[in-house]
Amino acid sequence: MHHEAALISTIAIGFVLAFGFGYIADRLRLPPLVGYLVAGVLMGPYTPGFVADAGLSAQLAEVGVILLMFGVGLHFSTSDLLAVRGIAIPGAIGQIVLATLLGMGMCWLWGWSLGTGLVVGLSLSVASTVVLLKALEERNLVNSPNGRIAVGWLIVEDLAMVLALVLLPAFAEILGGKSVAGHDGGGSDMPLALELAVTLAKVAAFAAIAILLGPKVVPWVLARVARTGSRELFTLSVLAIALGIAYGSAHIFGVSFALGAFFAGVVLSESSFSHKAAADSLPLQDAFSVLFFVSVGMLFDPSILVRRPDAVLAVLAVIIVGKGLIAMGIILLLRFPVGTGLMVSASLAQIGEFSFILIALGISTGLVPKEGRDLIVAGALFSIMLNPLVFALMTELQRRMRGAQPAGAAFFGQPHYQALSHELDRIQARNEERSKAHELRLHGLLERFPVLSLVDRQDQEALLLMFRPKSASPGERVIRRGDRADGMYFISSGAVEVQVNDRTIRLEPGAYFGEMALLSGERRTADIVAVDFCQFLVLDRRDFNQFMSRHPAVRAAVAEIAEQRREMNLAPTGSEEARVEEPVPPPR
Image (cartoon, rainbow, N blue to C red):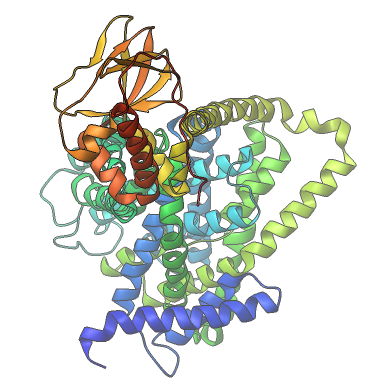
């Protein structure tokens, strides 16, 4: 097949096989991701038939990881990260150290060198955030306290791996390998201490920019885009922010794509656009995350099961049993309940994307033989397949322990868990209150001005952004006859009088004015004076024209009212006071 079609064929065949085997797995009461992994094995170079481009598959999988981590960040605030730091930071660091030592001991029994054991141990110590998120989403646990602890734990692991990727090439020769010219951290004349300091400074600078500057810039950009009323442009802006920040963070600050995307989501989570951004990016998250599991399957060499079945079982034992026991011990030492330990143990009982990066770096530095890569990939494949079973087992254990010892809950660290749970609940309640206030504001706007209910539901969020608040005091002239039309006014509170052709018309909350000149393009034909303290929502001329062009039903309703007013203004002159009732056609 021509190389120009390699991308299309990889995506097309990957999705087709993933769908087919995912459906079969579901019918067999297995998680669909088992089918995705099998599809990847069939597309890989170690099985007959079609062989996909491994490089393209890895890059497509990286896009899936970026979008998935961006989605996590949208539902995970800075406050959440700070709330779980007391358990996530010491827990993740302690678990990495002990799990690495366990992996080194296993490699020592095989006769491998210290450097090989260090790389393999590090690869086994870090879990896949993608796999964890899929597991939590399937069980609706992403927003639970234990789920947030597990996610925070893995974020700390990812940060630790950023440092490991810098330090490993620098120590490669000391550990018995070779330096890698041109690699970040390798082949550099910079002293190790200075290089480490630079790396830490870059990560700190990235975090500072993301936390301090991001919440001001990103929502401002999205607000301007949302005001255009273009759904495709808003979706494009969300993807540009996610992928752009991920790419920039990797190339400027040296952090991973996934970590950069996570912080991009955290930045956006503080704005009112988080729900819309999450909804718009969700389909792409699901599609590309499938390719992540397909790419894992492509790396698997089935012959390792024949050549080293004992080693594969040993690697699985370290990943599932060893890491689980280590995590449980650390959590109990930190005085948290067994239930939290079981959840985190299940979360860590797999490996993924960072493990592949570490083992590839180990091979390039000459520290790890290719057999080590095959064992890590086999461990990743089978631990991912077994992870749903591990979660089910841990859930059952937690249920039985709760039933067996309800009175002894405090012994298992319940006070610490409750304190953290209350803090997380408070943060979540604050976020929900902000979201609810936004919804109430929108609902109130539609209730006050029924004509706006003709706007499509998905465009009503953008509608709020178009309005500019304005106030007026009693006696203040809001509109002067002969002026150019600057916008359309919606009365939120107060009242105004329209003075036209010796006629006085009173408009009260729920009414609007100023649309006639905008529709006709002529100058104002009436004076409008506030007779009370007034609050208006103003739709500027540019936004009015853009808004009406996108919503012909609203334009037709407004034009109908404007025509009725025009006819009334041309009626025989006289003085009358009346409240103008707005006849609005029913939504359609």
